[in-house]
Image 1: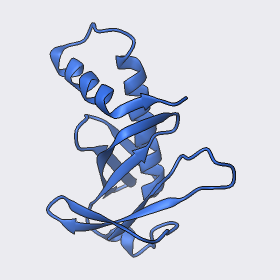
Image 2: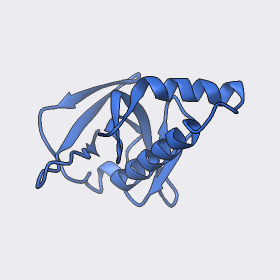
Image 3: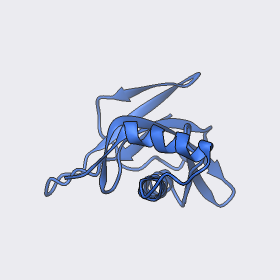
Image 4: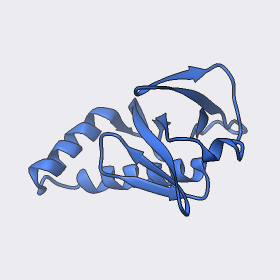
Amino acid sequence: MIVTAPSTARTPGSRFNKAFSYEGYGRYRELGQTVSHPSHSEEREEPCIVKIQALQHLKLTVPLDAVVEIDADGFIARTVDLPLYGFGNDRLEAISALKKEIESLYNDLMEDDRFTDEWLGYKNFLKKRVAPAR
């Protein structure tokens, strides 16, 4: 199964998509090609794992793993390490919504330290993987 994760590079005129192939047991590999949207036949297949390389306004120092699966009303993208979900009519829309959720959580958690131990753990996880855009 091939899925794309859009880049959020700010270079004028460039929007590159990285393609990944899910190989089972949590393994995936980046393909040396660019693709647009998954075909309709791919939308009926099993869940796939993608690496999120960048967020909308924040840079990731380490990619985040996400699982994208079909739902009765569209697609759901969820992180493997955080309790976050994104919903969309297609895979790319679901991944985009998830990126917004990750960024929103990061901004909320960086405001202060008055959180439960669980949420402080998520804060530390994100601190190691997210760097503000310059």
